Image 1 (cartoon, rainbow, N blue to C red):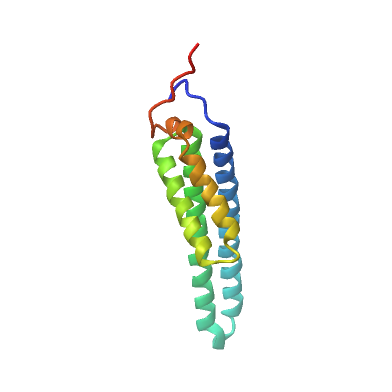
Image 2 (image 1 turned 60 degrees about the vertical axis):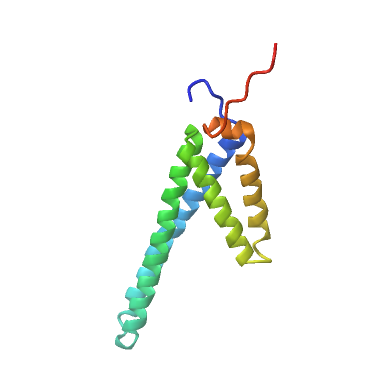
Length: 143
């Protein structure tokens, strides 16, 4: 890995992963705080206690999942930044999952399909694969 220059697109992907991780972390914390607070307020009314428990559990599950996603985003960003082969694999896996998610949510998911398709295309370019140790290094141009 020493001496290899990180492609600009990989730097951009790492930064976007960090930004996505920050947004997921904030959203996860908001779900935890807001839904748990709402459930405790509703829980003061005896007739609404079952609803309050469900509301709190929903907030905890969604918030926890979003926080988990943020941690994965930060790990992938680190791998992209350092050129780790496992990050390349995870990047492809999550891009494929993003395309599947986009297909499920059509027509709204068309932008997700396009972006994730571009990520797959970029990650499979020879110089990017070489940076991640997934292809033979590109020989220097003849002098």
